[in-house]
Image 1: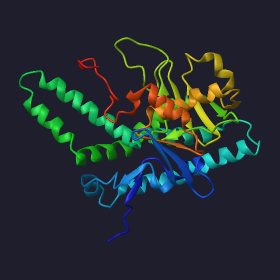
Image 2: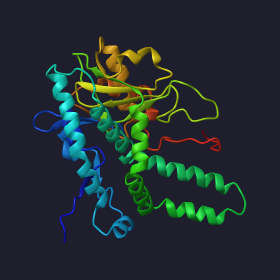
Image 3: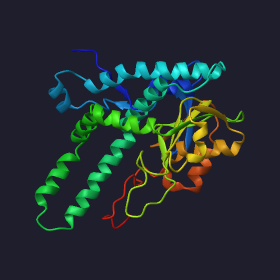
Image 4: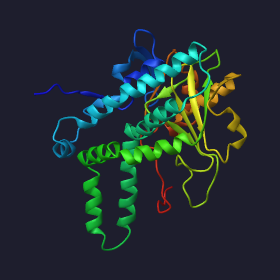
Length: 310
């Protein structure tokens, strides 16, 4: 029997270490149970055999192909992010190189679709489809197909196929590279949060009858904390033309209010766990108290024009 990876991370350990102390321990806030604890990065943002799919293993002809594929990619991502952080902290950073931007964009593209949150959203989309079909006659065969795709094994196989879809990943990364990138340095009073859903988005333009949260949508704002002290925000160019002069540069956050704005995304969109370098979760607790919807594990990730309860 080959050595199998049991605990499979949907947020890479190299990434989480940037929010941990030198001993590899970081602070965790469980927003479902409203409790905090400290643990090793290897113990969070992963599940046993999360990516393992019997159908995909049979098709590929090897064990754990998704886990091996992602692990092979992570060394390249980690190297570029390490180099960027080294230059930033050593005051050697001059601009975001094309290579750094491209590599981080690919990392973000994979990260957006490799998480548990993405799998939950996929399952909710199928449920919406099933609800719609159930309202119409002669759809029994289609409902059966949807039900077949909602099993755990089918969801794992679908997730794996998405992660192996390199043309889609490259398309996503090209879109991301086309945005305005601004690196932000934390305010000295606080560290950045991240979560088990590290890449988050904010919609700034309402488009009736159309989705407005896609990575190419007008007015989209995309966040990725890359360490406890630095974060990257991407801005869609047409809506944010006024900040184009800052593209590829570093901006020091001037106030705690700026930190609150960026921290909120990690709390709101975490599947369950928020991570921090410090024991500093008063703000996370406040967000969850004021907006308990974000603590609900069954909250809606997707909506549809055909969803009566949306």
